[in-house]
Image 1 (cartoon, helix red, strand yellow):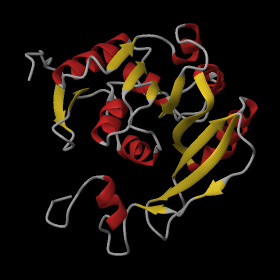
Image 2 (spheres, one colour):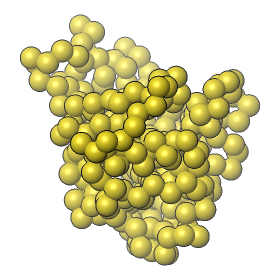
Image 3 (cartoon, helix red, strand yellow):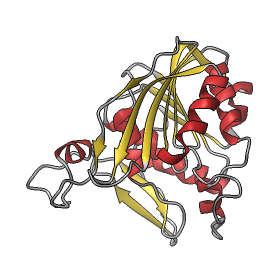
Length: 252
C-alpha cells in the first residue's frame, strides 16, 4: 500500500470488499447503507464510463469497482477537503488511473465533459429539502446532506447533456420525497424506468427509493420487488446479507 498520510481527524475504513479502503473524517459526513444499496442496485457494465455526482470521499466508485461495475470514473465533489480525501483514497487503493476526482460543481459537469460521451451517472444526492430540516452545524455534513432549490434540476440537466443516447442515471432518495424526484427527472428528459422501495422491515413504511432513469426513453415504469432490511426476528434479511457479502458465519 502507498505511504499516504492519514490525518489525526480521519479514519481509514476497510470496506470488506476486495481489500478496498476509504478515508473518512471521524466527525464529518460518513457514508451509510444508502450508498451500498445504490451501488448494488446500479446496472452498470464492466466497460462503462461512469460519472459520480457528489462523490464525497469517493465511496461509490470504490463500491462499484468492488462489484466489477464500471471501467473508468469521474467523481465530482464541490468541497475541496472531501475531494482531497477522495484523491488520497484512490492513491491508497492504486486506483488513480481509473478514478479521477474533480473539485467542481456537478451541475457544471457538462462544461468539462463532452456531450453524449458518458454511459452512466450515479448520484446519492443531498436529501434535505430547503426549509424542511435543520442545517447541520458541521459544514461538511450540511453541504453533503442538504440541497438548495436548484440542486436536483441542475444535476439532472447536466446528466442529460453528458449521457449517451439511452444512457442511465441511478439514484437513491427518501421515499416520501419520491414524487418530486420523478417529476424533475421527467422534466429533464431522463425517464424513470425502474424503481425499488427499501423498507426497514415488513411492518414499517418505505424510507428509501432506488431509481433508474434512461435518457430519452419511453415512459414506462417497472416496479421491482421490495427490499427489506430486517426480517421478523430483527436480523438482516438474506438479501441484505448478500448485498454486504455477509455469510451466516460472519458477524453483522
